[in-house]
Image 1: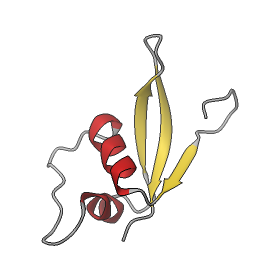
Image 2: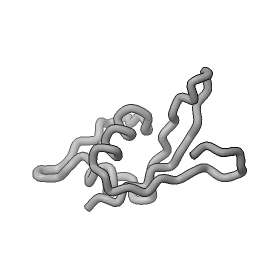
Image 3: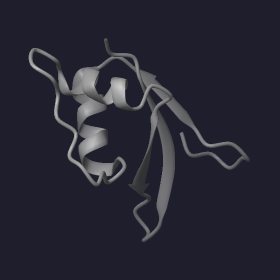
Length: 75
């Protein structure tokens, strides 16, 4: 996924667990916490707040970070 090249990789997914976990662990740090509305999943709240996706900075295992754009396909 992080092969050498000039573009940032993108991951489009509708998997609620993947979207939520990546957002909570590696996603943007918000000034105000993101809370889902009544009867709304966390993934849907993320997709609503970040319709074009969000960047996740994932540790590369050797002290650096690699960035990937996560595009949530939740409704």
